Amino acid sequence: MSDDIAEYRVAKEVASFFIELENKDQVQLVRDLLSRTRFSEDTDVAVCILDTGVNNGHMLIQPVLAETDLHVVNPHWGVEDHNGHGTLMAGTTAYGDLLSVLNSTGPVIVDHHLESSKILPPAPVENPKRLWGYMTAQGISLAEIQAPQRKRIICMAVTSTDDRDRGRPSSWSALVDELASGYEDDTHRFIIISAGNVEDPGNWRNYPDDNLTNEVHDPGQAWNALTVGSFTEKVQITDRTMNGYTPVAPNGGLSPYSTTSTTWPARKWPIKPEVVFEGGNVAKGPNDSIIDHDDLQLLSTYYDPQVAQFARFNATSASSAQAAWMGAKIQVNYPEAWPETIRALIVHTAEWTATMKRQFLNAHNNNRQDYANLLRICGYGVPSLDRALYCASNSLTLISQAVLQPFDKRDSRYVTRDMHLYNLPWPYDILSDLGETPVQMRITLSYFIEPGPGEVGWNNRYRYPSHALRFVVNGPGESEEEFVQRVNSQARNEGEHPGSAGPRDKWLIGDARNVGSIHSDTWQGSAIELAASNKIAVYPAVGWWKERHHLNRWKKKCRYSLITSILTPEQTADIYIAVEQQIKVAVPIEIPMARSNQDSEIE
Image (cartoon, rainbow, N blue to C red; front, side, top):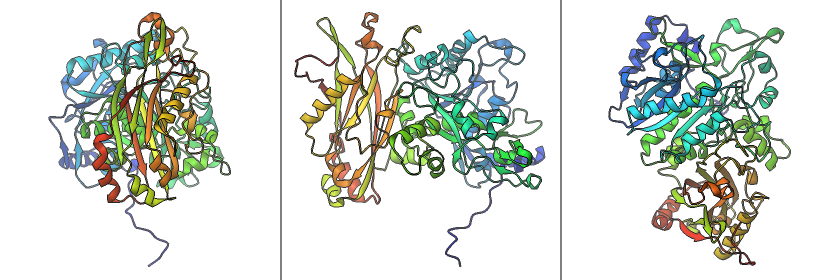
């Protein structure tokens, strides 16, 4: 009867409701969930958890984690979970947001396996720092040897503050990059790493300022990994004893637990975290007291089911586990997708919440520097599984998986070699009819670099990565010849001045996106302008493959994934039909880099 009410919803139970139940009641909830869950036995997709081990005796985990998939890098440690963290990770990587699942009554589908590789020893034993990378590699290797045929998402919520050095690579993060890249063993791996947590209540009191000075933990600076931070929508406090307490973070804002990369040198090291998932909240009360109450946390599986079935879960560990669950869902739905593509889809679907924009953008001047700062805090925003699956199947989205050779040798000189030019099948007539209607085009480019051997030159972003790739779009009225000439000019100047993304007033982020090994940006303009901006070039930029040519890697090839989407206020069936008719022509055309007026190849 009121125009001020949009809809009614039943209030959802918070984590504390399930945690406070007696174990026998929790068991009944578990049995109910299992009764409406379908497990896929023949799936070849798995999430490998590198952690403290997992207890697969838990009723929710046993169907997805076989005994043969329990590994440990040191047999003396045992495969069991010695402190509970690994089992918390398992519950979320298997079911996603377990709290949401328990609050629902519908069917649940779990269509991937779990694997556990225990890389952390029980106390008081500690892994020597020099072995952190080795333990990571061994944990992955054990799972791959056991089931080499699987398509694997690797999730590690194990980080350290010892080597936080403002984004500079460490031996651990470099090994993660090497493992992901596939340049040594021809196995490309999708690796997810938590950004690391802000854990001191004193820092929570200074939210969000202290989040901006707490930098992402090692090895979260790895270029090829998807590093995951936290945001939160946990703002409901039901505990009556918490009168006077209010959530520290607003609904949709950065989580108080999340670290950032705002202190890293601009335009030098990757944007980290790339995305954020739910990580929980904390509450502030009388006398400036701070508490991380169960009402504001997530829920997952407890490692000792004789005591309890559920336990609270939070921070970037919970966020990275949700990212792994999402990655597995994408891999199941798109079995031919490369690791580079899954990473790209997660980033491509990420959006900033309105709260994030209010928190970290200048209300009076949302310029590119503001967005560059927002990227270093919240990454590209909150991903959506629905958008990832939808845009990869039915929406106006193009996905290319391609290979190019960045460099070559001509006579005694080492030069840039390949560029790919895409002719986008935009329906010119339909877009022209929309005229000045505002539209958006989002482009995401994802590839893996090979880290430079040794640590010499790691302070230089052009000496650490083997190569870089860039994308650029033609402007309205720019011919193909003019466009190729402009791309060549930008490629020549890349070492000194990062290439422009095209007409500078059209891109949301611009040149600030050209760091790391994944780049995403949104073009904004009119439909008629988009109709004429129908070409994308992907071209190489400098790296040690070319600069350190004595190492004989200059003739290596690289893979990349390119995702392009257009969004209009009201999509029509005519656009889909028109694109479907043209889609077969949207293939890359290899074009050698043109010579300059001085008749010399691009340097």
